[in-house]
Image (cartoon, rainbow over all chains, first blue to last red; front, side, top):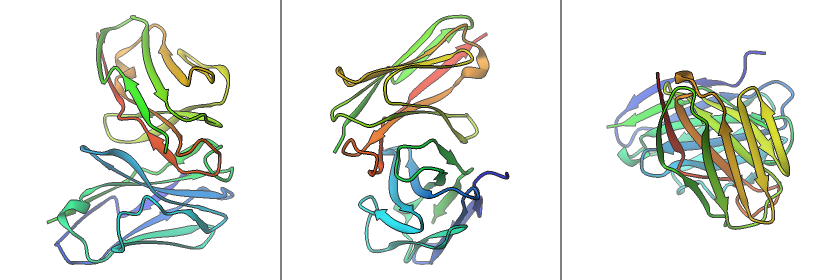
Length: 115
Length: 111
C-alpha cells in the first residue's frame, strides 16, 4: 500500500485566499484524522471521521476551517479565508479501527505558508 | 480534557546510553500512543498500549494505568534514534475521543 497520501506537500498563498488540502487514507481504514502542528502549540487534533462521518470537530479553530469526507478514500480540509496565523504543517492520518483506539498512520504533511 | 506532560523536553546523550522519556496524563485512558517525528518531519506511530509493556527492537514502552504514567525506553541508543518523541492520549479518556498530544521530547544522540 502507498500509505496515506497528502497533497499538496507545500502550499504558499496570500492572506484571504482559499486553501484546500487533500488526503487519501490507506485503503480499508475506517478512521481519518486531520492534525495541525506549529512550533508554539505542537500537534493538535482538528477533526476526525469514523466511517466518513465527522465525530469530533472541537479542534477546528473557527468557521474559516471546514473538512469533508465524501467517501472512504478522500478527505479535504479547507480554509477560507486564510490568515497568516494558519501557517503550519497539516497532517492527515488514518486508522483501521474507529476512534483513537487503533494505530494511526500519518501522511507526510502539507506545509502551509500564508503570507 | 486530558492534560499531558512529557519530560524531559530536551535530551542529549552519547551513543550507547540507555534513554528514558516520561509521559504523565491527568484522566484515565483506554490507550496511550507513542509517536516518533523524524528530523525531516515525518511522523511514525511507535506504540499503542493500554497496559503493561511492549517491545519493538531496542524500544520498550511501559504504562502504569493506576499512576497515569508511561515511559519510553531506548536501549543501546544510536544517532539514528535522534528525533522528537511524542506521547498522546484520548481527550477525555475514551476510545471515541480525539487525541491530546504532549509537547514532545527532542532527543539527540551524539556519536
